[in-house]
Image (cartoon, rainbow, N blue to C red; front, side, top):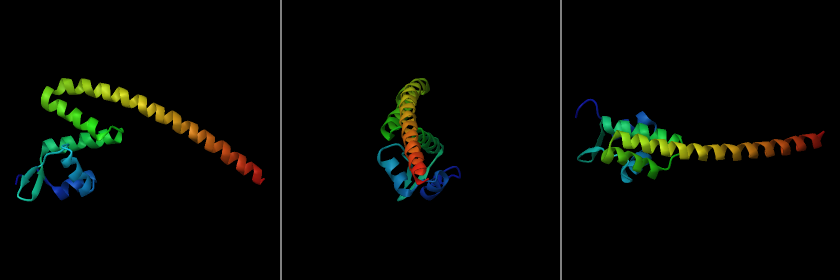
Length: 122
């Protein structure tokens, strides 16, 4: 085993994910670790992919969108992947802005109800 690979347990710790999450990412083919017997090892490529996966999740992308985006790199290269990233990011920004609008409306309504209740107490 070379020093630049992480074990399954080290991968979970490094990225602060549960073993179940890591296994699921493998199951849906987001990650493909090297296998030696029953052990799994993650090299530089898998670490980079995991970083991108978690970043995508933080931005609210669906795992299937992330999987397809990662596959573009494998089949079409960096430029095609970057072009797809721009499309995904544009679409996600619209979605997040809509969520923000809905959240702002909910907060405004909650504040009015809270203030009315506080006022009725006296």
